[in-house]
Amino acid sequence: MKKPKRGGDLPEAIENVEQLAELLSRPGEEVVDLFHRLEGPIGIIGGGGKIGPTLTAMACRARDLAGSDQDIFVVDLFPDQAARQRVEAAGARTVVADLLDPPAVEALPDAANVIYMAGMKFGTSGAPSRTWAMNALIPAYVGRRYRDARIVAFSTGCVYDFTPAASAGSVESDPLTPPGEYANSCVARERVLEHCSATHGTEMVLLRLNYAVEMRYGVLVDIASDVAAGRAVDVSMGYFNVIWQGDAAAGALRLLEHAACPPEPVNLTGAEKLSVRDVASRLGKLMGKEVSFSGQEADTALLSDATKARRLLGSPAMPIDRVIGWTAEWVAAGKPQLGKPTHFQVSDGDY
Image (cartoon, rainbow, N blue to C red; front, side, top):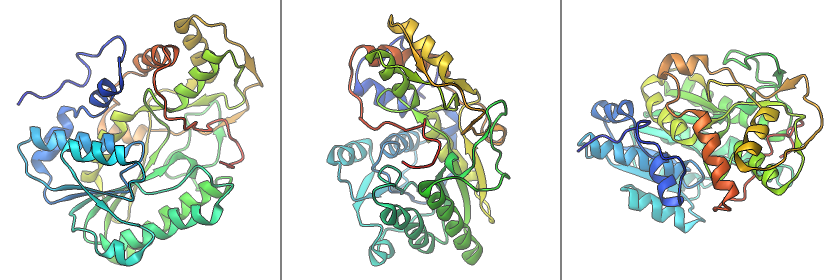
């Protein structure tokens, strides 16, 4: 079977959701090669959200290209039945379970490799106790259940405090002293997983993702939507990092081979530090829209330095310039969005 290309046949525009899903889930050669070496079942825990179906489809495509017969299963409550159908159509099986129920977690299928994706962000200010339960209790249950597996656990760049806007951003050794309940619940998630690792010798990666993007949501869509609607673009959070969601999924899978005890923290994001003002201006030009701005760039921003990830994995395959162009066309054409703004402008941690 011919390996799909990651960057050699990219369209000028993405026509529809089906084409987007295919592009997002294309496994590069490195991911296919991983499945020649990877042994044992793969469990994707909490994989029914925004990134989970992409990661699952990529894993299934890579498995099939590698000629492997690995069991890949996805655990979630699946409130979005369409997401469950996409996962099953990709070639994974689904397991419906409440991850806040310890007996249900103990009854989950065995896995030698785990991608941990469960968590809660939006609604933190209105439901702080549920946020802490999702982000701090579930890791304890899953960490105990899969103590003998390799685990790549999704975390967030929000575990860091803001850094000078002129800098390259936070590095993995920086202290985790962020503002706000959501970010601190994410620190708790990491600390609980570290405890599980120390107790059971579990090898882990703590994947600190800083803004995955695709055509239906993300920082670029947020900015493009303001431009399309003629709203002033707020530049008070003046700089940001993003990574194509397909590259984030590929990175998570490949980091399984870098799991360690104690856990290895890895910032995963794009190589560029992007300016909100510059990106909005570029989007406006591509969309044929006048752009106005509000606020003034602050001296600090939420930025991550992904030098370590580039050393382990190489640079992300998808050029962000191409993603900006796709975003401009998609939003200008009024194509579907998820309606989930990132709130990347928030500076007090209140999501």
